[in-house]
Image (cartoon, rainbow, N blue to C red; front, side, top):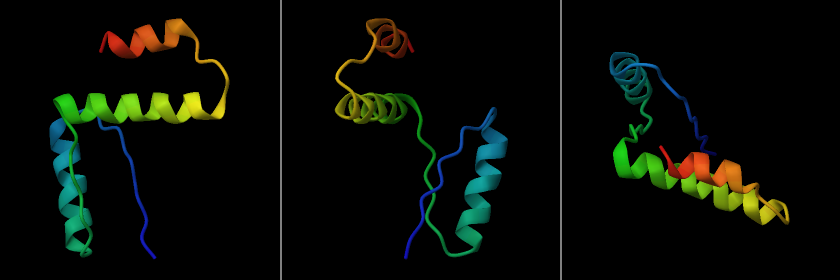
Length: 66
């Protein structure tokens, strides 16, 4: 059985430390930046949209401004 951990870090050094820790226990870790991070946020919006009939336009606009 596998698990997925998603963590939002405030700085790069903390993220690097977390990646090293995961790799030390034979896990795989990846830091999302730039376009990959935007794609992740859009995927979350799509998932939310599939659960409800409406997603507020203001919420969509705030995600697009990132």
